[in-house]
Image (cartoon, rainbow, N blue to C red; front, side):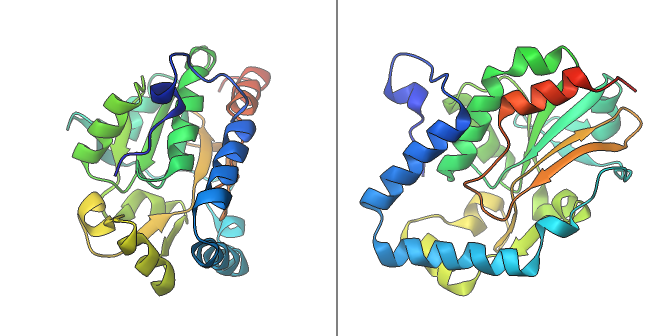
Length: 231
């Protein structure tokens, strides 16, 4: 259940804008994934957009409740520890089985020097610590992957939803065993989101999209950090 990254497939790191990498993966899906399966995923996105999840996430100006999660090595990491270092960029992803999540984390990894000039970076997913360890190791990521058991933190941010039954059946056929990957049988996921949080816990930037194939460019995150005053 591993998505071969572009870095693994070729000797050079892919430095294209993330939107180009996403577009390439969409083209591959359009070519190789059956049309009926694509239609199921498209309907799931439409249903989520109708529920307006992205419009009701934790907004800019809100205060983030303190949380504590385990990282890819099983170490306990608290939000207060991360914020003690300065501003925090949080990426909520679905998991290592999602090709777009893999592309996003690899793209964020490339701009890490620019992020570290003004903030720290961490990714949060519902997958288990072991899955996070595998993902970080396979894709050579240099930032912590935090395991959000039962999506408790994602729920605080207003990001969670339950996978629709017909999409659940597709995942099961594709061997995306979420109960195993996430360590619970809720079949809940977060919609992908990117947050920038000030060191006092105030949300400075919030971007979420029910469509997991559409995410903000990492360079835009770096630009926001460099252009906004430090708290």
